[in-house]
Image (cartoon, rainbow, N blue to C red; front, side):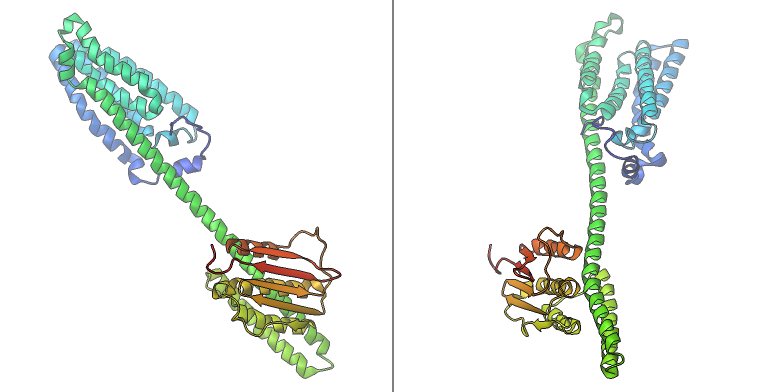
Length: 397
């Protein structure tokens, strides 16, 4: 992942969140490792003491101190996450500050050469760390240039009395590429960690959205069926109120019981503990059709249906019978069961072939598709409607 690749892609919030996942990536803790690295500057300070005297030594120490402060100021934002810095608020201003500091550090590095001589190339290791942390693989030319300079420059300046072999003994020509590889691997690992954290956050958001959709779908299925039954029974009780007081009271008692069951179902649906059974839906559906004045031809037993399909077929019966009562204006309705299919047929008005499916039918199609089945729904001729769900036989591929 290139630190400069599509800096506008992630959001500011994601970058800040990713940067705060680990306590060592925030506050003063992120400076601990950069400060520890500055211990290697003692080697440069000793070289200044060896090769410079008086005002020259003071200048060498001052340049070295300025380099250390500038390096800490430049590395602090990158220690959060190189890619995160690019998308935080004020990214352009931060970029300008970084490259200004980078130029100053390069100038200080060159200025330190007369005072610390070949030991000054230790500063090149720190410049390498900054370059790789910011540019990633694109820093290769800079790494090669610093490595060659640390190897050849001491041998090319006669007054330093150095050779290429002695430069290797100082390890700096090896330390620069090793530091580059180490920082590159660390940056990649850090970027992968932040990408994983962001992916987990996105998956959590997606799971929450799917759960909200599941609850909305289940509540529609539950309340649509139950409220339709309550409405029909309440209407029947109202019509019977004067003519058959006892029957009206019985219907109202059933409405109360159904309302209580519905409340329990809603609570269970939210908790994801509700259990829909085919036998239960057929029993409830029989009462619903009776209250609506629809002649019901429903099976008394469900043993023919494979156990793995019974809960799903319970949802099919619930949705199908609810739609019959709501929309069909039918006088009769039949349910046919097989081991891997269920069919609901009525003699109502049906619907136009081009009518868009309702929310309940769309949710039912999703349930059936998840189980590897298909839904067939459409008008019959000369009148009526058929809802059929077919699943793959149990044990089939």
